[in-house]
Length: 423
Image 1 (cartoon, one colour):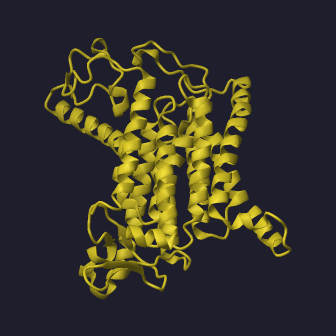
Image 2 (image 1 turned 90 degrees about the horizontal axis):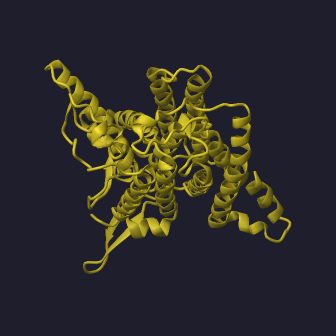
């Protein structure tokens, strides 16, 4: 809103109004504003929740080797994050930009889905929350919406990067002059790093382009569902998901900026995505919101994020990557979320396989994987066989596990950005 106001005032020569046309100014302002809103609103929200004794079901101290009980701690802290994201974006973003619209819709939709899950857990005293099939359905719907919007909207275009041979052995990277609809995406560690979904559907003959878009929509649904659930599984320790997600969003902000800047896109030999600069504002708002939330969510937490935050955060990260055609970098960038999800899948399937053979067995001491690091040998089931029962030796404190996961995510984020040059 303010962007359009100051652009109007610029016509009358109002001092300072021209600054609002700079992405760097609006992005940093959105980060600061989101952080202030998150920290200020968070304090009042926590007090309001405590006065009404609205808290998550008590967490069992038996699962913590240090005997830390967590009860009467308010949940639904994701509301703080979502408000702190939405307000700066509405004030500072270009609301006619198709990518900003997609991000706002994704945030609200998945936020409502997570809120419904938390509402059932807290007010209905049902620890299972919203049935899994309804969560998946909600994620599929937003995935379908995002995929179809990118397919149908005339504003969602790219300018493809191509190599042009100059005199001698010098190669110049240029972008096609015409912005087009495309099913191409960036694939890591490959010299010619544009991968086209339509090529996979080559067997469809003259209809391979349409079939490529169908495949793109399916991939979009899968990525959004997977990352949203991965972030949800990662939310089990104080500050864990908020810290990891802030780091991931910084990396996505960098990728969005270079994708929206034709000179940087040429230097890095990646696709130029016109209009994606507005995603930098969204990323900065999200980073500010998460850092402000960490003020209260860091160990020992004064409030929990809940599914209101974790489901939305994962989906937001996925949509950001899809818009800038970097979804195939998600397994690297969101490696922590991927490992959390795989650990649960492997644990469940390995346990079922052993049960069919009359054995009690597990791969890890506990899943998601972050819980594996805070289990003492005395807490293990003596009748169960563990593949990694002796790893690690002893138990780590929750805060140490969280910080080490942050460090891992920093390394993965750096590797993700480096893949743009490692080919």
